[in-house]
Image 1 (cartoon, rainbow, N blue to C red):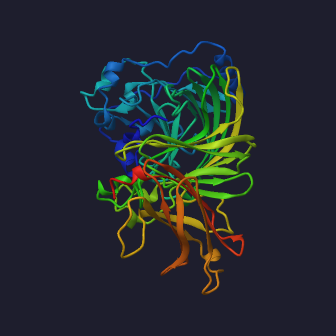
Image 2: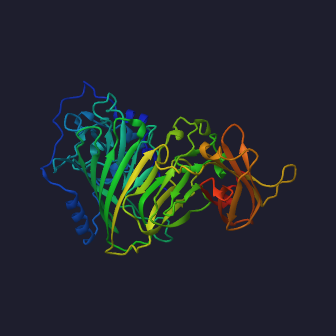
Image 3: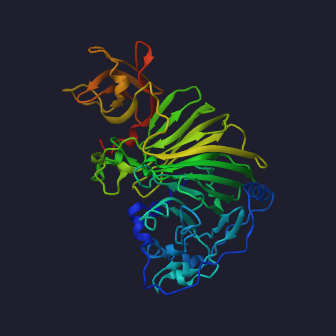
Length: 534
């Protein structure tokens, strides 16, 4: 997945407003945007192009004058503003105007943009005149055919803030993101993941090289976007149905179809991938290095297995790169979630409490495979160090084809919460042992809090649930359950005695007379990740 600094361009809605700016009456008059010749377009045509391309040698995307593009750093890029009066679909021709990103230091590959109306596609051609930029901007020295880096969709063109507020963005390789119900950007999705965290094999980052943006006649219709994917080992065609609607509190929904074709063998093919950031939470080695209580875009991986089990795996900032696998047959969904919505737990103006959760729901069955969770060490919040994706059991060999059909829900909470079990709300880790006695160096205390009033209120007064906890290494000591004051929260507490430099996979749930009360909490514990904080 590569710990690459992409977070400079994870603009919040407020930052996007500053980037776009408002139209000015002082701008000089200029010709309208230039459109290419029309041609027939269909998704089937794009799929066939991807299939044919997989049988041909790979050709890398166009990189106009890389030396100049490298000079368009974060500061310079922020001064380049697309002129919203030239946005496709800004008038009567559609509901959601499209605006475009300029090339920059982190996004140096040219991406072709097309507008589709009534089955006819026309290229929206790049011109520096489409952007306001300083006279001394390095971008002015780029060739006239440089192209765009990506695009975003603005809010409904009937809204007063459409010029300054966007809701979905495609930018960089095959990355894309959307705001959630709280109007905030956070984690990202990707087209595919190729050989992430494979020893001695570099990760490959295929690119969306062409986009085809169809009009939506009214704001309650989806915007249909098709994309061509190209990389040394893979090609593909994607069709996105991007659904916003007038009720902004519902977040963003996407339906995605993808047809993938392999040019070469791939050791780890990650499908429907999600990418996020986790520095530290209530626990973690970096918590004494920063003034904020928590810093993360997501705090856990949620799984809904094919058998119906609900699993919650809190995220880690590990001492070294780790990959955790969760084998399954036809999972019902998975996602990287931001469950902690309390501002006091972050105390940060970048609004981590408002970052969206992202849930993947397969529409077509996936068969046998595994959800893999990739965690990479990080020492700052600017790095995306978390990945989650589906890896099929079917071999990813040259000539193979994969078809996907799934939904993505960008919301505050997962769209299909379990009704009959409580959710894990907090994971706390500290020194173990008994109060009033010296704290042993090899014992650690865990406290896992579960909350769901409708479930927890069923526990009779004076009755305590059973804590079922197992570990792959070490010894579990004194597990017990206790109610947390001032709420319908129950806490499972236990100590783990474990040798140095030993990793443990811990699994826990609470039950009452054999009936599960909670989802299954799973955690990968490496004491080396906690020692600096302790």
